[in-house]
Length: 225
Image (cartoon, rainbow, N blue to C red):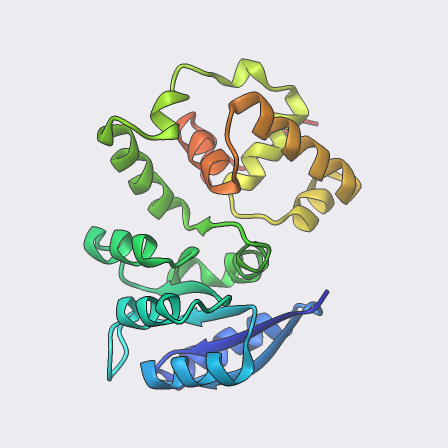
């Protein structure tokens, strides 16, 4: 299926770079672009894209306000934040308001396509640096799923499931994981289902947080043969 997306960033050069990256993916169709919060709200209402790639600092309103207004309208468009800002107030404010993903611009070249695919599938995608911050906050909060699972370890998983989990933590989608491990996409889906069951998690985000918490972050890139 084709994923439809709208890009909103007030810097034309940034939009051009994003457009080049996304146009390289045959399953992603860019419906429109804008440079302001009002553009974002208008384009989502008119075009109903699967994903809105949204910068945080726009000339007329903050990305937090845009995200909140879309949620108030019960929009089905997934909001994927693409920004250079990673301060905690911005990160957690956007995630709590309803953004489904947070991509740092210095990682966008490698991860943007995967992040868009994950967001369109209804899952959450976080840059590894952001995910680590979420883990620290979750573990410190005393009541999260991640904290409840802290005593589980990687020995619960098979070697191949660990390979799949590691690549999940790097932001790869199911197709990319299948290509990386020379597996069928259906096999990857089965492995992910088994990972969810064994770890007691219900989403990609929780699985990624577990992976990062147990040392399978982006810096650990090698997989077993």
